[in-house]
Structure formats: structure tokens, C-alpha cells
Length: 369
Ligand SMILES: Nc1ncnc2c1ncn2[C@@H]1O[C@H](COP(=O)(O)OP(=O)(O)O)[C@@H](O)[C@H]1O
Ligand SMILES: [Mg+2]
Image (cartoon, rainbow, N blue to C red; front, side):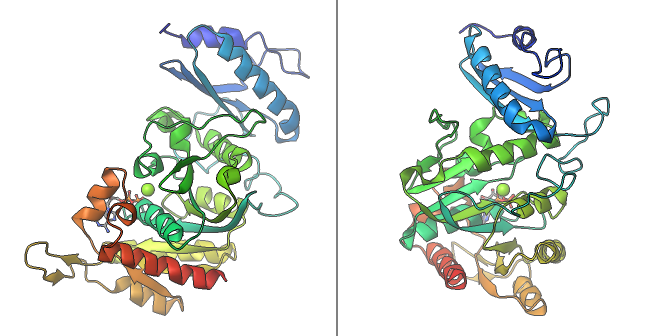
């Protein structure tokens, strides 16, 4: 394969002028975050939010042009809108500055948008990372499918997208449908989308906040969720935490409700309380709390140990007048099946853990109706 150089791509893009300003988009600083790896190119166009339509056309022209460059096999681009000075150094994390649709711009007149082709949307949140939010999200989506619903999972955890791996599709790529839409990825009878399918591994670390938000806006707009039939329930795997980024996402998508995943440790619970406050702020209904890694059953003697003083999530739920949706034990099989891309609900359909996920999914459905 021809080794594509970043400079080659930049000089190609320099032949494209901004439609209104008589200068090329590279020198204007509109092209940002250009990366290329093994022929796959990714970049963002930093635009004025009032010019979305015009710049969307320009984005298409850029993509087509770059596809002509020798050795380029794929182009992924997004529009972002960052209003601050270009000279400002990039900030770590995202959410400090906002993409269009975020806090920094007036909210869309129609409020949070419904996702076309999707009936119900449920967010899975946690105060901090590593509590098992993604594991819970995928197993819940699979549990909804077991309950006879068309389910999907939408991975919004930009800096740790784990859905491609959990779906057993680590190298999958969406296909373009030609009308600006892209296909969701299907496996185990559920559909999924993740920024992990769109960018090269580890690229997230170099994407700046507004680009990330732009990518999310684009996924919301462009994924044809109902390609394989209308979706009854879409599970959103939110990034951990309760900062501005999460708030912006929650404000931009019409949610039916949220579930909060927590481990029993006090610290995690304190953070879960913050997540609850965030959903209260956006008037999102909270369906309840799931306690993950709740207890441990010794695989040798069958004895149960409450390693993290089990029951804390249940207490928090009571205190907040919220429902406790159930506990999932700390179990090697839950981890290993996820690592293998065959989550437990699909690989051990009759196990007690699978039953626990299905019971939780069932409780959520009751609340949806
Ligand atoms: N109930 C559980 N039992 C055992 N391991 C778990 C359980 N839930 C999650 N894990 C493991 O913990 C790690 C973090 O889980 P993950 O779902 O990626 O968390 P998050 O999305 O909150 O960062 C993963 O290795 C996962 O397999
Ligand atoms: Mg995760």
C-alpha cells in the first residue's frame, strides 16, 4: 500500500477555498486534527455554526477529494463549531468548549432531538469509570433483545469506546449508504454504533473536545438506526462522570430515562449521587440504580462474600426515593465473556447472571410503559 503523508493530504485540501472567504480552508485553520493511518484519514472542519449546510457540502467535497489521493482507502470527517480563538492551546478532555448544539450556542428550538427510527432511548450513566457501565449497557441491550425487542447500543464513551470489542466486532467499520447515512453494525441480533468504529484505535486521545462533540452530533444525525427494522430500545453508554460533556449529550438527545450503575464502594456511591443530580437538572427521569460487582460467589466453595460491603447502592436509592433495579455479582465469567466479545447474556443464556440482567431489563421496560 502507498504510504500516505499528512502533507500530501494538506496540500490537496489547500486547493479548496472557503466558499465565502477567498482563502483556502487549511490556511484559514478550518481543517483540524488531520490524522492518517494505514490509508484511513480522519479530520475535523471547524466551522461557524450558522454555516452548517454550506460547510456540510464542503465536507463532502473534501472527502471526495481525499479519496482521490493515492493510497487513501477511507475518509472520516466531522464538522465542529468552536467559537474561541484558534490560537488558544488545546485543552484536555472535552466539554470545556462546546460544539454547536452545546451550551455555548442557543439550544435548538425544538429541544432535545429524537433519534430517527428509535422508539425509546435509555442512558446508562455512572459517576466514575471502571464501574462496569459498558458491561451493563451491552448486557442490558442483549437482555432487551431476549425479551423480544429490537435493541441497539450507542457508545458515547469517546475516550474509552468499548462497544466494538463487547459486540465482538473490534475491526468492523460502518458502510456508507450513499445518502449521507451510515450503517449501524449488527451482531447477536442487536445493532450498535460507536466512535470506536469510526476512528483508528487510540485516535480519540488526539481529538479535541469540540471535534468529539461534532462526531457525536454527526453520529446522531447520520446513523440509519432502523436499517434492519425500527429499534424499540436504544441503550446509550455515556462517558463516565457528570461534567459538561455528559450534560450536553443528555440535553441533546430525547431520553426516556436513565439508569445509574454503581459499585457498592462509598466513593463510587458519592459519585453516583452527582450523576443523579445531573439528571435532575435536565429533568430526565431516573429509572433506578444498578449495583454492579455487588458481591462475590467463590467458584470453589460457593460461599458468598460481600467484598465491597454490599447494599450501599440500595441505601442510596432509598435515600433518593429511587428504585433499586438489582445487583450483579463480581464474576470472572462476566469479565471474560466481555473480553472475548461474547457478553454473558449471549454466551451463557441460562446462567443466573443472565437472569439478573433480564430481570433488570424487565423492570426498566415496566417503567417505560
Ligand atoms: N460484574 C462484573 N464482574 C466482573 N467483572 C466486571 C463486572 N462488570 C464489569 N467488569 C469488568 O470490569 C472492567 C470495567 O468494566 P466496564 O464495563 O468497561 O466499565 P466502565 O464502562 O464503567 O468503564 C472490565 O474489565 C469488565 O469486564
Ligand atoms: Mg465503558
